[in-house]
Length: 200
Image (spheres, rainbow, N blue to C red):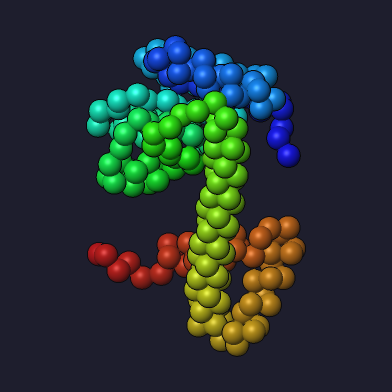
């Protein structure tokens, strides 16, 4: 389902090609379309406009121009569809690494704008979801490591079993209305401060 309220920013120095993209977007039901022809100060303009999706059209991009656009796509964290007239394998790989959601070589036609934009949004959302899940998994793993270290400290200093050490951590977390990982981190930090000075 297309959200007609989607704000789309079109970046194209060529006014005729920009008009083709804009017409394709408006035909697809996107009314909030902004077109920029001058790329100087583009990051500031993007911050002002706050688009949901960015469409970049580059006729004959040189390496510097592509790299600037790739840096932009890394910074803005929004779905980006990039149209180029010609490309090479290195540029395609760089586009993927930069997080460009759709990188279309040759053949900008009005009727292709909507499906490419839809794909860019879907791909961006899927990638964002995967990145978020990966970060949550990393955080969970890190928290488990800290909890294991805290249990080890309690087992050694108080002569507790592993289960008793975990129960004490959990009870302390509940009593202080904090996460068990936070309690474990505090204990590990305190133990590090109170322990023998290894570096001296």
